Image (tube, rainbow, N blue to C red; front, side, top):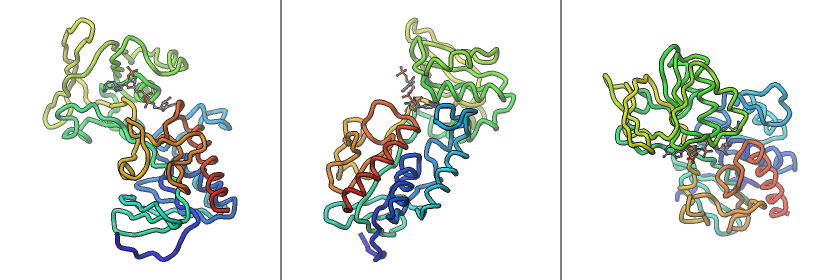
Length: 309
Ligand code: NAP
């Protein structure tokens, strides 16, 4: 690890989703100088949400981009700084923690809040990766507009899949919602919203193959898991919404993770290394929502304050 930054920050926050931005807000407001490192764009999964109805304080719902920018501005108002950097290596023993980003930049901090969030899980089908961006998408809000008046499939049965199907139904000719079980995992509030003439829910069904046509997605080969019956449907796009995997690979050998890769940090957000906290969807917990990620960020900042004092 080459070291080229002499400044030692009070706290570095890795990730700028709701957990990271809230940790930065609370740390900055407490008088520390947080630096937030973000891999791509701020907001994490939140920024990809078209409509957020259950984050308190927004009676008419709010879109993920607006909520992200509001959180970012609020943290910056108290002095939080943000820069781009994909953390690939860390040295966490000792009083000064060292973080190195992909481009070789080294940052030092007295404490660290890890809020890297989670990334979409893939289906693991043979040509899924090759057709990514050619009809295979993991973000309906980002890519939905490409499928105006077309036929698409959403795969999954959780809140994301249900929300994506509703969102896409406003612009697509037809939306199949394909779920492997006989009932959705999504919250009941989606039942009514999914009841639209152009949404067809296909239960007990898995996707065995993404069919290619002229170098793009052309259809899906589906299999009913109860009857073993196989059929093909023609679709122009497929939105995969089968959950997330925590983005914790970069600390796999350094911090305690559970069997699924989530940080083994309790409600205190403390990891097994003093001065290092884990907040948001990357932490082992029962409810992963924007509001619980934000709450983690506040708790982690409190931990930072305690640690630094
Ligand atoms: P999720 O709740 O983990 O649901 C994933 C869905 O994908 C499940 O229905 C699961 O089936 C299915 N699935 C998993 N692996 C699969 C595979 N290999 N093949 C086919 N299907 C597969 O994920 P999520 O919907 O992305 O939500 C993640 C978290 O964010 C949740 O806590 C959710 O409540 C939250 N969220 C909240 C909102 C909101 O409140 N507005 C919006 C989006 C997300 P099974 O049901 O059979 O397990």
